[in-house]
Length: 369
Figure: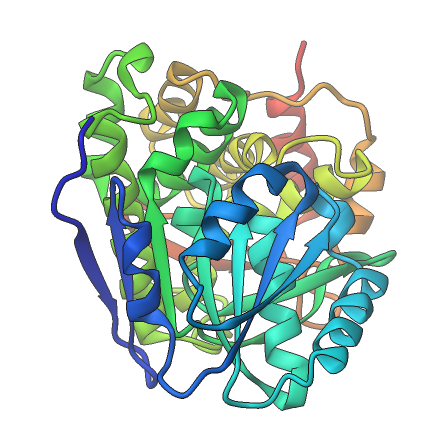
């Protein structure tokens, strides 16, 4: 696909910013960097080293330092964050300078956290290179690292100055990672934009490729869902009751079990794959606790499996092990485990303290038999 006019999605929080989406739009990067910056730190994983030189050339007006980090979840540690802080200190980074992340969701999470904590906050611009990062990690201002206790338990809300989603960067993305990223898009379909589900159901999965109009529309729709939700509840404070719309927590649909599966696997299970299983799990849970229409429960399986995502769990960890991990989920309040479930299509609600009987029954329903 040739370059087309980019789409700009405005995220209307207290500090509004633009998400630019299109093919061949890397030349828009300078437009997103705040004026007055002299230094730019590029946070980039080792696997994208080949992109660094041409990417740095886009920033030849600035003093550029590269902070190379490990690939995947290994990057999201206190040790790696500390090494990045040391790098910023050595380069004399001030509050007017900028961090630019180039990579997937782990890179945006880590780079955003480093920016949020250096001098109590410097600007960050995200350039996501995966579907997952474009529709989820790069938008919304959540940053974080992992600890032995769980995923993303240490972090900060730090909104970017801008996000640049160049779909051309997806051309080299392995198919398995492109498919994994679609889990977050499909999640947005269930919680906010059913048109996403229709597109997936009516499009040949083989035609959802990096250069396809279908993927471009899916990514844009996913970003719009997230932009609307975070604009109304940036710091995830709306979903504090057991009933009613969960606010920003709606974006965690399927994530409570997903994070537990990831942690139990030592983060060898892809985030999107775990989210797909987690979405089916909460649908099964809602069937038991809220009489969710069985047809909608089954639709979770058909839509997710259509693109090649898993809808059952192989049982590598026991229910008891996963339950213990879910108890330290960020949505938990005291001893109550809280979930985002549906009471209808595009109608997410909070569910606090479901019985262990229901939790176990839903788990049995997603086990790979």
